[in-house]
Length: 360
Ligand SMILES: *[C@@H]1O[C@H](CO)[C@@H](O)[C@H](O)[C@H]1NC(C)=O
Ligand SMILES: *[C@@H]1O[C@H](CO)[C@@H](O)[C@H](O)[C@H]1NC(C)=O
Ligand SMILES: *[C@@H]1O[C@H](CO)[C@@H](O)[C@H](O)[C@H]1NC(C)=O
Image (tube, rainbow, N blue to C red; front, top):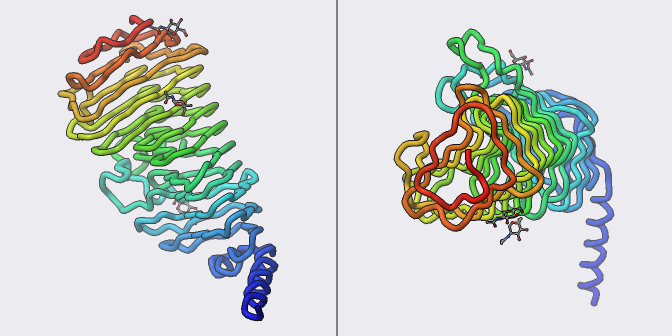
């Protein structure tokens, strides 16, 4: 009896002490602050080579009250990690500044200086809202939520990386600046603005993923893939997005060498794309080639365009729709009656004859 009373009072003390407000003005404040279920994040600069890592108690509310900068140093990152369950993360319009121009050399993760990537690692459930990220060194968000998460009202602005710099040999200095890399379940990303130089969204595996009401500008469009071996992607909804001046609007890419994977139940609706430079829609099983010899180890089914119409305008010189399936790998009937694509030229549709309601 005495023992259990002692336990009760300990639990009570723990509860009482976490109902505090922690304030972070530098890395040295983090440990004490995350023992509280309200955390205020004030403006400061994280020293180069170090990370801001918030391992939060369940139910914590984080309020950003200012901008976070990261010192410039070549290392692997990530720069920011947040984890916890049932978190309310309020960015309040403040930004994380990755110092991209210090790292950018037109090579991204493919060479040159080592760049912190991803810049932002999100491992929370709950909501993550009104956060701005500018000038990521390379990939921006990696998301692996432990339970349902809504990411809303975000801004990613890497547009400064569209310009060449002294290290980039005349090409865009920013490279591999993926907006969201997602291998997860029960995630919604909505009402956000993404200006970058690579995939706006890349879904590598997972289910019940919704991407809606976002604007993607300057990059490589909205992508499922690239798909590796032994992964499943199912239940993806891509709706009401605006895609401006991207290489492609909507893409599914699977690696030609992959085996044992499935991609199914991918639904597009009400998306609008303009200024598309290479392909309006591309479904290609030959990655890393483009429209090369496709593999047969990734089964794709249930790729549909439902009401309202998805409307895509491609540039002259671009192809409207290209589909390149391995023999027997794409199956079923895909209803594309709510897809309209104009401009450019028709692309090849090979390895699959199950697309209904659409001709180009
Ligand atoms: C990192 O370098 C970039 C480009 O040189 C600069 O804009 C940024 O202010 C620097 N960041 C810090 C924290 O000094
Ligand atoms: C397809 O995915 C959606 C969104 O996740 C889901 O609501 C629906 O039940 C799925 N349909 C099938 C046939 O699995
Ligand atoms: C495709 O969807 C349209 C609109 O919902 C519908 O009218 C049509 O019957 C469907 N076609 C097939 C083959 O299911």
